[in-house]
Length: 188
Image (cartoon, rainbow, N blue to C red; front, side):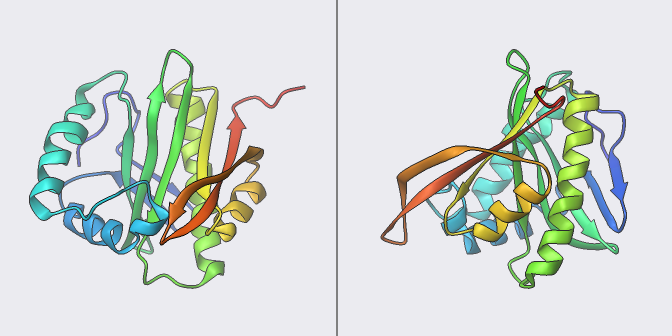
């Protein structure tokens, strides 16, 4: 397993969730999940097998050698089963910010399991962002069609930073985008 030069480890564990730096073993499964859940992602077209390989080879895997990668991605395992992927993307070291990215297997349909895994994942991202990458802020953008996601973010200590009203059209319907963030040191 390859490690990002910027991080202290190639894998992190919290409770039953283990995240390991992304590799090529699951990129096609990730592609399938992304295509199945295109309506919750900022993705406007189906990803082909060839495009997925090319994207990872040119945009993801070279970042392992950078001391300031613009994203760090991980495969997620729960009780040794591959269940999703995510990480910190759109990292700006100048501004000390990064965006949380998280996607689970669409077959995981129980809100309780999704919530327990997402909270663990967020705790691991906090550790990586604030203690290893030296970031000050993590942020998210969530479509209003995913209110369970919004609820979990708020339970994990992410504060609302506002709503972009009628900001996107999803499946022919107008939707809002909820903005949340967490600071490494809360404001006093």
